[in-house]
Image (cartoon, rainbow, N blue to C red):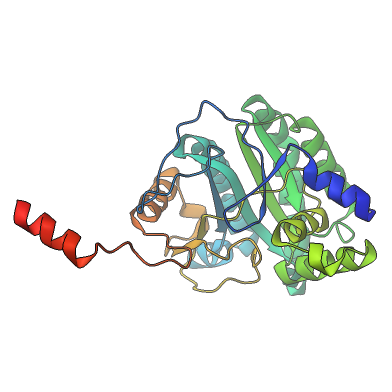
Length: 292
């Protein structure tokens, strides 16, 4: 992508900026209600961006005396539940971390089973997602995916390209650090001038590195199931100001009610973005006290 093409892309009406300068799509859901967080900051009419690290499948199976792959299959059912529940909970973008770049180190049989599960999910759910207005993208590397899975990815993305109700992003062979490095390489290859390499520009380069058709807004809420408390190389660029919730629930047991509870907790939190809470001046506090 040439420098002029990059600049043209950033001028496309699909792009806007968040309050932090990161690229975000222009609102298309004009009739959606605009909610506010705990400190009164309006949320995007596009809805929340929620990311989930879907952890605990293997441990769920082992606790039941089942092979680990049984937990992964059950985890795919949890994905169906969460995708069905998400739009009605005010979620405009849902990113599901399914397989990291480091997960290739797992036993070959487990990796092969996971790839089949991913392909089956994409093949079976593409039509349902299209009917519900859900656009599907797979983010991450594609050069290490087998031809069957790659065909399923491309077919699902094509079938759901017109979806505007929710953007579902599934991270397969994904590494946030690798995506950032790839974006830096794109900037160098395109000879982007240093003074023009803004957060907005870099966010678009990260999106390009992840094969994303529609760049997503920053993550509002990151949820990790399974009881672990780490980020595991998940969306490090996009979660700069995300609220984080660690759930003890294993992913195969995760339900729409769990997601709803996480969002309720998110809405109770005060998001400061580097600011401090507004404090009334002494004269204002005295005036309020005299009226009580």
